[in-house]
Image 1: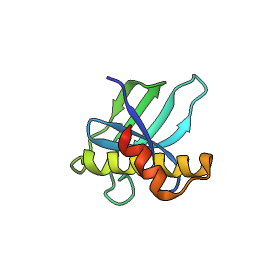
Image 2 (image 1 turned 60 degrees about the horizontal axis):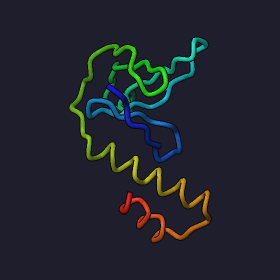
Image 3 (image 1 turned 180 degrees about the horizontal axis):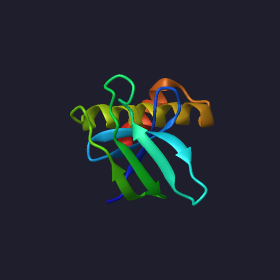
Image 4 (image 1 turned 90 degrees about the vertical axis):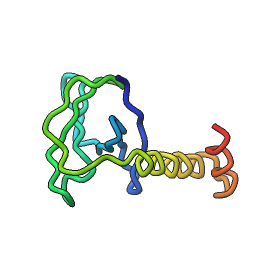
Length: 102
């Protein structure tokens, strides 16, 4: 199953997979990317994910909380709006309209 990419409020790349959001941990030498659950500090969540491109290679550990796809997708939309505003020097309202349309 493919993952959905997004951006955190601190402009870190995130991945949404099975209603859970993961934050990029590191890029490995073998072209894979290691991700850890966004709740790793606040909820002591040990869940991790390994991807190559947009394909999941391996899931590690169990989540200590329930997933919330609405929050994850909301973060993704806000990240896209911020990227649009930076690249186009546009206003917030025009960026919101562009995300709603797509």
